[in-house]
Amino acid sequence: MSNMIQVKNVSKEFKKVIKEPGLKGSVKSLFHKKTEIVKAVDNISFEVEEGEVLGFIGPNGAGKSTAIKMLTGILTPTSGEIIINGQVPYKNRKKYVKEIGVVFGQRTQLWWDLPLSETFTVLKEIYQIEDKAFKQRMDFLNQVLDLEPFVTSPVRTLSLGQRMRADIAASMIHNPKVLFLDEPTIGLDVVVKDNIRKAIAEINKNEKTTIILTTHDLSDIELLCKRIVMIDKGKKVYDGDLDHMKEKYGKMREIHITLKSDNDINKLSFAEKFGLTGDDIDIALDGKKAVVKFNSSKAQVSELLSYILSTITVKDIAVGEADIEEIIRRLYKGNENDETAHGNAAAVEA
Amino acid sequence: MMRFFRLYKTFVVQQLKQLMEYRVDFLTGATSFLVGQITNIVFISIIFSQIPHLQGFDYYEIIFIYGFSLVPKGIDHLFTDNLWKVAWFIVRKGNFDKYLTRPINPLLHVIMETLQFDALGELLTGIVLMIIASIKLGINYRFGNVALMLLAFAFGTVIYAAIKIAGAALALWIKSSGSILQVFYMSSDFAKYPVTIYNSAVRNIITYIVPFAFTAYYPASYILRGNDPWFCFGVGTAIAAVLLTLAILLWNRGLRAYESAGS
Ligand SMILES: Nc1ncnc2c1ncn2[C@@H]1O[C@H](COP(=O)(O)OP(=O)(O)O)[C@@H](O)[C@H]1O
Ligand SMILES: [Mg+2]
Image (cartoon, helix red, strand yellow):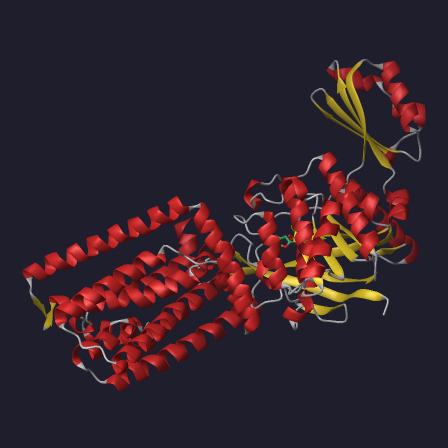
């Protein structure tokens, strides 16, 4: 059994009540509810091998949390099949959750008023961990997540970064085979994000834990995952190698410029100088701030930078990577082209 | 079962530790409750100084029933207060998910998590009132009626807990059911007085629908006047058992229907 996680044609629909505005609307809705069906996850399939780290990536509202809730047994799929660690998550839930760990970055699973150390004491009892195993476990988690400095503080007094480390530790206390992390770096600053990523990587390396982590931040994925599944509006739009995807769709880079004077930007001609036209370039101007997005496989970042700096005077200049929305936009373009070429609009397989 | 008690003990120890830390909170909570109870008693006293016999019940009999009603209510309040939070906001805020990712029964988990020590004020008031009334009325306690009284405290507590479980279960569908639960829970105030003062509609409701009459008046009336024990305790036990079963069934259906909270 090398596939730890098997997900087959899974969908989840939510019924949403449409509220009409005003008092009349609320009275009306008492008798006659108008509902609308939201397909939060739409016919998704994928598999994850034991010990693999899979990045589940997509913009806000894509359906990542809904997918994680189905994988962890919190929600029952509307249709489709899930088998994880040889079990169906939403059936025999109590047995299933003994061998998984779950972290929701947006809300803590810890007890707000308990000191962290006491939280672990309670979890020890919940998961029925032997004293000796518990001690070893705490030592390991302490070393990886550096809990010592705040282990006696009540959870409510922890910073967001500390709380996230504590939450990850709590989800690992019973040595789970599979770990689900829903946006484990959300709201954290760069340094803390980096620490968390390193800890997750170390846990995976040491324990061979299978990990699925969701994020809308591409940089999370780079350190942690070789393989990603990208979803958008509930549908899987990409499943495969991260590098391959970046090569194909993610070559867009951004140069952020703060101009000295507004119309300086017109002095730049990227088409003439670098042959960047059509989809390969996009310039957005907002007051004195300009963002130049361009395809870095057609022109070098350094060349563009020196061209800009030698042509106009700028107050500030910075280089960034294209964000996930940009990649998805290009991915759809890519799929459309594939469609005309091979008559295949399905998810792109690497 | 052993495991359940060990786990419960762990939760209780945590609660006690916190109680030590927030002693002041506890004292203010319990004091404000005591003040509330005393106001109630004064209120009853005023009514009774005007009408010394309410439908054939004398002052200390009313006090006895009133005190009796506080005991199961207090025990339930002590143990299952977290259900209110489920009804009001735990589901709505998306914090119910965590109970489903732990290898214990979610209902037990919710209940074990909190001990509401404020309830001790309620309990104490109830017991003191019952003692005073018993002395004044010269109630003769024997093994038989003490055992029945303890039974009544038990099924009375179950009735309260069942209503709260059912009320909290609704939140699993509608996200927030605090106000609905409150309406039902408030009807327990009717149970503090002899049910004979109400018209038959109210009486039937608090006997068979939201059977709070079994949490005080019926069992107390046996102790006071020897009313039919089969009805007061037999039917009471049966109704409590049925109600709890229905509440747990509703809760389990709620778990299956549970859709988490959208972000
Ligand atoms: N419990 C729910 N009830 C109704 N709609 C929901 C619920 N959970 C999520 N949704 C909807 O499903 C879609 C996907 O949400 P979610 O899975 O939270 O996305 P993500 O985690 O990728 O941001 C959104 O449109 C959201 O509003
Ligand atoms: Mg989410």
